[in-house]
Length: 93
Image (cartoon, rainbow, N blue to C red):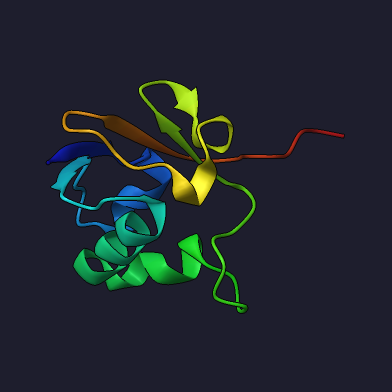
């Protein structure tokens, strides 16, 4: 049951410029573990000191926010496309 995972430009310096991976993760916790195993430098950007996925990292499955699909309980389906999007804040004075 492969899913396609699209990684943001902001993460690509930690993934050797890899923009897309396939994963057989069954759910979000497995996907995060898979991403960290492939790209150990991502761990500090994906998880806080408490080990939880950072609140500003958003996951979309087929363009739907995973929080509305059941979040960590959502079971990925064959062919799902997962977007990983870190929130970006800032502005000018």
